[in-house]
Structure formats: C-alpha cells, structure tokens
Length: 82
Image 1 (cartoon, helix red, strand yellow):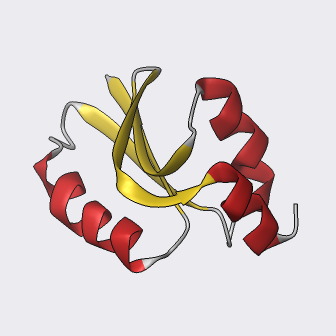
Image 2 (cartoon, rainbow, N blue to C red):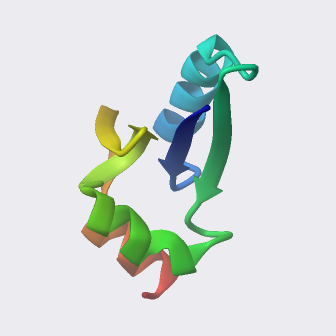
Image 3 (cartoon, rainbow, N blue to C red):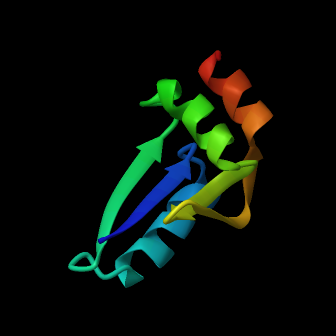
C-alpha cells in the first residue's frame, strides 16, 4: 500500500490544497495521514528530514511534492515556537 503524508500549517493556502488534492487519493490503495504542525509540532524534524521545505507539501512514498506556497518551514517553526 502506498503511503501519503500531507503536511500543513493550517493557513488558507494549506487548507485549500488539502481539500483540493486529498480527495483524489484512492484510500483503498493509499494510506493517507494529515499532519497539522500546530497540532503536531513534534513532526517538524521528521518532515524536514524527508525534504519538506515549505507547506503545503505531500510526501508520497518518500517523494516530496511541494504544492503552491503557504509558508516556509522556518516560518512554521516560528509560528509553533520550535
């Protein structure tokens, strides 16, 4: 089964991307997880190690796809105090 992780910061760009893209993923073939950094700041290091440079971003089977531009990871860290 494929693994997809959608990382976001809750901004309007991120929420729009989540609502536009995630419904297209076939949940019978893809395990989908959504990480909102304000709720899960402990996931910041994990995302950066995978190569996430900005949000929103979709990591699909280890490959990062940056979607539009909501915020840099540095801005996200400042916002969540990490």
